[in-house]
Image (cartoon, rainbow, N blue to C red; front, side, top):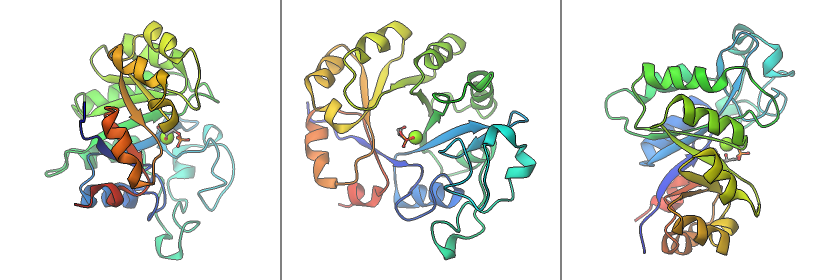
Length: 242
Ligand code: G3P
Ligand code: MG
C-alpha cells in the first residue's frame, strides 16, 4: 500500500493567511490543494460561523462568545488584522458563503467541515449544516467531523451518505470502538496515532484515516506508506511541490 494522500489546507492556508477566512480558502484553491478544512461555530441567531475558537478574542478585534452574539454583530469584525496588517479587514465568513464560493466554476475542492460542538452544545448544528450541504448539492464534496462522537452519530442518522469522521487527539485506546459504534467511516487523528498499531488496526478494519496537522513535508513519505487518505496542513505548498 503506497497511495498518495490528498492534501487539505488546514483552516485554509493558515500558515500564510488568517485562518478560516476567504483569503485562506482562496489561497488553497490557487495552491492546487485537494481540499480545505474549516471550523464551524454557531451564533446566537443560529448562523453557521467559520471560526476556530468559541470566542472572538484570539482571531478578531473583538471579544465575547459567538453563541452570545448575532451574526450581524459578528460579520463586520476584523478577522485578519491580528495575523498581519496586510490582512486587516478580512471578515468571518458564514458557511453559506463558503459553499457558494465552492460551487463556482473551477472549484472542485473537498471541504472538511469540523463541527466545533465539543465544548458548546449548539442546538441543531448537525441539521443546519446538512441542510446547507444539500442546498448547494455538496453531498459528495463535504466531509463532516467532530470531537463530539454523539454529534457524528447524529449526522450519520440524518444523512447516511455524507462522509463523517470521528475526530480524536492523542492516542485514545477506544477510538476504533467508538468509531464503529457511532457508524462513521473515518477517523481524523494525529500522525502518531495514524502511524501506530491503533492506526494500522483502524485501516485494516476499513476506516479511512485523515491526519492533522502536519507541517513537515518529509513526514508524507511515512504517511503515504501507511495509506492515510488525507494530510491536513497549514502549508499545502510544501506537500504539493513537484
Ligand atoms: O479537523 C482537524 C483539526 O482541525 C482539529 O483540531 O483544533 O485545529 O480544529 P483543530
Ligand atoms: Mg479544525
